[in-house]
Image (cartoon, rainbow, N blue to C red; front, side, top):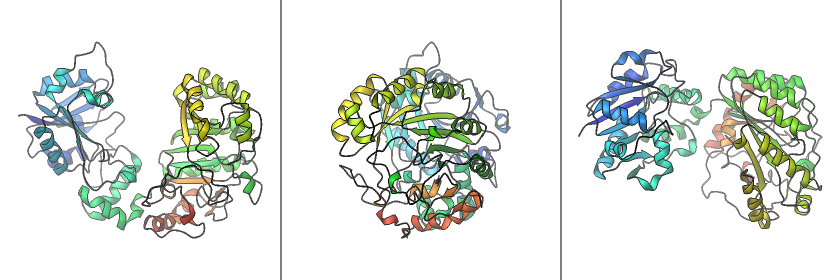
Length: 492
């Protein structure tokens, strides 16, 4: 039986991404994987012009790896099974690949993959029988792996599981991701070589600082003002008033984030309504010029998400914008009881207008809090908005370290505590430029500094010990991390 490897280069991956401290990844993988396999082939996108072209047995790919692509590959290679491995995977473990192939062959599988191993540590195995059983479409469709996973009961599929499970780290082992590449380089330098998969969890536990790269998510409070008086809001607990953010402070935040040279996401949220800020649209234009910003989340009560807002969103070229509207209620009565004012009809009409008018309709979300007062409304809430095909987010209540009343009707906290995701990747910045300890420190009492006085990068380094202590289970007492139940949640 002819079992071959296809090293697959994704689009937008450059030779710089494929260069590790001491080696060129394609050369390294060729040596690492060649034992036991007849051939190693390469699939590269048409746009690629780097060194991989010179390696021989290279297939230039036009479009995606759909069924048309795979039928052609199997004809050209004569393979019985092809093991697809992403080419930017320097930590790929040959033992895992061999174990997956043995399982695939033993159970006569058509397709094999792993759900618990991070990308870059495992493979996909495709059989000739699978490819021959699928009719060739008239035009390109979805990637083959997506088609199979979306129709999982129609194929003979084997799932591969490997301990330890490190999915909670939420990283990939693909060098095409700048942040993950930095983590892999730190692992490589610490170990003196590429560590085996079984060693990774112990290394992280011993040296969690390896994971501490730079902010991937920053939430900026544009203002502390809001027209509503929601029963679950923490604004009434403030020790001082939160004013509007200055333009200079906002510009400084964006400027400071460039120092990391890492992609990140911005949330315009905080305690107030971001669209109330007179410079909201200016700030959005400034964000659009930042090449490192991957995604913008706008958390709004929807009162000012009018046609001007829709037009502006549609005209934005970059980056991806997601609009999250917080609306708890199914009619004027329930909305007023939860939000303090009878403005349901205005919000309702704005949401319908957004759904009809937004160019990227899938980037509109409604958010309802999972509390005692909304529990009786949920079925009707879903019935209303599913008719309009709006995606619903069921939000966990945050009590902000017991600042506000606990209204939850269920507690979903895991039994075993894991390191706080927010301390590893998030920053919460108040409207006066204060960087708080975390999202729970809404008054900035335990602040690490202010962007007006010290760069975000310098403050990020000062926060490293906070993260490492939390990772090792040494929870802070000020603020009291032991009282927090947000440690298992994550943003992006």
